[in-house]
Amino acid sequence: MPEKPTSATFSHKIYDCNGILMATAFVTVKGWYSELDRWSEVSSITATFEGEYARYFSYSSSKSGNTGTISIYFDIAYATGFNYVIDYYGRIAQK
Image (cartoon, rainbow, N blue to C red; front, side, top):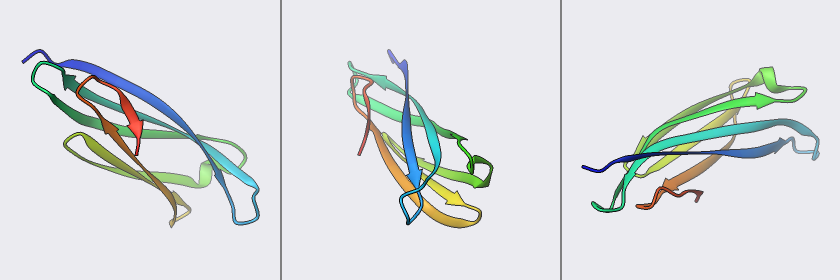
């Protein structure tokens, strides 16, 4: 199978309910794709955080086939989430 690797990093600013910037999440999505076989798959989703409150953020991720989701938490409370997809040409996009 002629698989090729692909990856992309997305920047997401995270604000509190008063519009104050809490942190910026840098989410990296990695995967594989094959134009010939019309196939793609997310292999990992990871995040790093920068900003004044970055140390309070954590994440979990899940993947299924060519889609993946990241859930971001402030302390232990759910803050936000993002979905991603890889197409057969290796392009990664936020859904």
